[in-house]
Length: 365
Image (cartoon, rainbow, N blue to C red; front, side, top):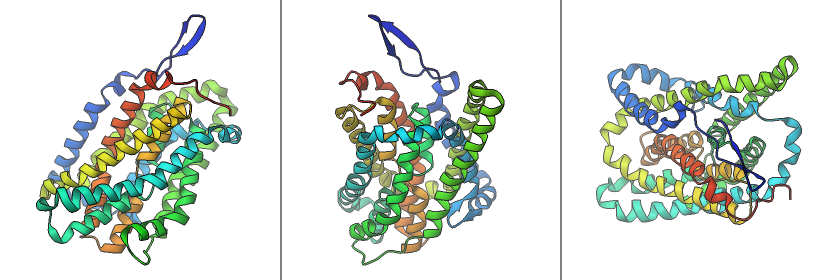
């Protein structure tokens, strides 16, 4: 992706980053990967069963490797010296935290009650209704950790804001996830899979950040900014390829479920889709009203909408069992996550002109 600058009436005007040829057809590649994943899951189920079984604390290791390949370009852009300036983006941080913790879990509980408990009740197994709603709430109660680096990179998001926001959400999650879920599910206490939470943070944040910073330092020492820029250009196709391969893997792993319960999965996807677009739109609009720069508003909207599906799935299994409606609802969240978030990326990029026609962004205070 490259950004162009035009001169209008003597002033520089930045245009939205242009997409490369491969990225322009990303929607097509996503659709093909979904079909290929489902087809392969049916054709060679043994392979996908083996890949699906390669887990530690409910974290799938093949997916973790692919996520690493996706987020490295984003992490390489981070300059530790610039992290001290992240306080300049406090409006974006406050907006994201508010949407993640004060809006999203409660809006999902409302959507689950409306759609699953009422509108779709005649079409769903009666004994699973409460489980489906519980799974949806678990999905919405934990903000995404790893994939937001990918979404932020695709919208040319401010990398230091993204890293700081993810780190802050992880800190809040340790304290707030259990009581929030217990409140919404009406439970006296819940069993949080701490091994999943800790391992995910280490795998997706601590280790890749350290590895990327060591690599960045080596590149800058040996070849300067030019070497870093060349590496980032070379990694972009690899990152997108890993994203598409993740889709194939996820849909291959769940191909049997999709073919066995297509109506249930489609109905469960409805409240998930609505809450993603609602929360992304709310965060994006609030950032615009507050005069936040587009490069911060984009990742803020994406972080505000995405979910930590590994933790949701693990918690659903721990609380309700592997074959429960809650576990199935969280799995639907896994299937929906990548395609729907890519559509939000597309909307954020296409709306940049509208966004920046608002009051000039307050970048430094």
